[in-house]
Each structure stands twice: as C-alpha cells, then as structure tokens.
Length: 366
Ligand code: M6R
Image (cartoon, rainbow, N blue to C red; front, side):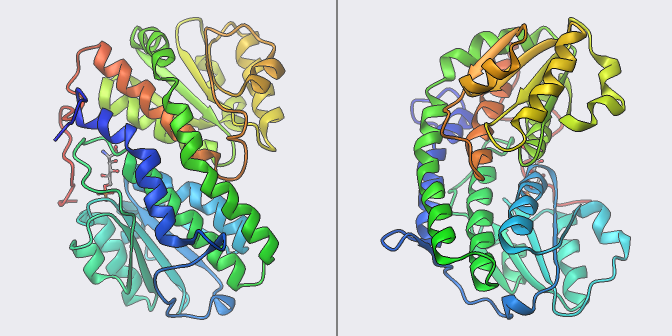
C-alpha cells in the first residue's frame, strides 16, 4: 500500500524517521541512554582483532560508513569488500574474527557466498538483515534485524538508514565493551543517535526545495558526487541512486581524490554535488569545492548554512541542511537529500521510479 504517496519509494523515504527511531529503540536502552544489544555476542569483544564486512550495492555503502564508526569508536581494524569480489579473493581470515554481512533481502547470492566463505574460515557471522526469514538470516550465527518493514521500491532507501542505525549501535556497543568508550562518551553518542530521527524529519521538510535542483540535474548527462569521511560513501550512494532511477551517469568520489583525475571532467554543464556536513573535514571539503568553482564547475552544495558561508563560491544550487546534523551520525540525515534528489530527477524525467529498467529487488543469481 502506497498510502498517499505516488510511489513506494516516496513512501519509504518518508518513513525513515519512524523506522530508524524504531530500529534505535530496539538497540538502545532509551531510559538509560545507553546501548543495549538484543542478543549476546558469541565472542569476547576485547579479544576481537579484526572485522570483515561484505555486501552488495547500497548495503555495501552502509558498511563503508560503518567502517568509520567501528574504527573510531571501537578501535577495530575493518576490512570491507563487495561480496562478488570478496567471495573469490581467498582472503585469509584469522580464526575467531567477526564477519558482518549486510543485506536487505537476505537472499543476495554473492553476499550469501561471502557469508559461507567466512564461516568456513572460522569467523563468527553476524548478518544485518531486513527479512528475518531469509537464507542469510538463517545461516548467520546472529541475525541483527533492521526493522525497516517491507521495502518495495527497487532502490533501497529506508533499509539503508536502518542498516546505518544498527551499525552505529553495534559500533558503540563494541567500543564500550572493549573499553574504548567511557560511559559518558557512550551516553553522549547515544544522545546524538536519539536526536537523529528528528533531524531526518527536518531534512524531509526540504523536499520542495529539492525539485528545482532535480530539474537542473535532469538536464545533465553525467554528475559527480563528492564527500569526505562518512560522507564519502554517501557520495557513492547518491551516485548509485541517480544512476538507478534516472539512468544519468553518475560517479561518487572521495573529495580528496578530485585532483587525482576527476577534476579533468569539470565544466559548466556537469553537476558536482557536494555533501558537506559540518564535521571535522568540512574545511577540506570546502577547499575541494572551491577547486571546482575556480574551474567554472556547476556546483550544488548540500550542507548547512555555515558550509555555504565557508564556501563563498558561486553555487548553481544549495540545499540547506540542519546545522545540528554535524556529528558522527550525520550520514543518516544526509542520506535523505541524496535519495530525494535522485527520486525527483527520475519523476521529472518520467522514469519508472519503483521499477527501474533492468533491475531486480533481490539479486539471487551471481
Ligand atoms: O538485498 P540486498 O541488500 O542484499 O541487496 C543489495 C543490492 O542489490 C541493493 O542494495 C541494490 O544496490 C539496490 N538496488 C540499491 O538501491
């Protein structure tokens, strides 16, 4: 049921504050303001030396965001690869390590094969999964539900932000158990997480302002997304969404890589979409943005007013984000404009938003 929405995707985008809130409630003790995993970890977190993450598509990008969190909050080395590569890499995995697979459907063939490989290598396997009756959920030692509810749109939206919510809680739980985070630090981070759904709701209120940007992007034959830190995988995700829905070629790049090649593409016509939450890397992202501006690039900034001020550049478009979406978990909030932009470009172009050509919701063959 699409409710009052034109497409399932629109409905699923708008459900996010609610479903992310529900996912957080499942993994947090809201009264105490601490993390509370709904399962026992079958290993000693202090003895853990390595985490491996594998997934495909959007689920993979959730894992790339999580790498920043697991490294920073739990001081765990993380190896991450797309499942179609990982399953054949013959990566040596030290006995007793933790493998995390991420899948909305729980049926993705390559992700399942990555899971089986990790099991054979003596890993503990935790699946971050939406469909709890799926093969991946069944074959994992722990199935961590994301509680997004059915996702019908082929383009993944609410599953992505719910995957992020679960990853964030897991990273904090591991950080706490490993003695990396103090109780006060845990509580401060949990408070940030609890504030996230309201910020997501605020980002959704911007929808009318996304439409003119979407009409602009719809004219392009190619687009570049830039971000740093956890906004880098969001750039990848934004580009994937645009490709899937509008069939406009798009690439996501780490902003710092601009000089190493893609800057050659800059001209007046190609939209360069910069995702710039006000975090520690803002200054660097802004200087990359200015490099694009200096070459007459077609800039669209998604960030707070402070980022626009710092940029002091000629912008073709600006989508204002809440200033408070600035901390470690800004990725959950910035996912929304990335989704909305791709959605409105596709709607404007008259594309089949819920069922893009050539795509299947669940990829059960390799
Ligand atoms: O069901 P899964 O999460 O395992 O699916 C993984 C990818 O196929 C999926 O995220 C795909 O990239 C989506 N179409 C992205 O919008």
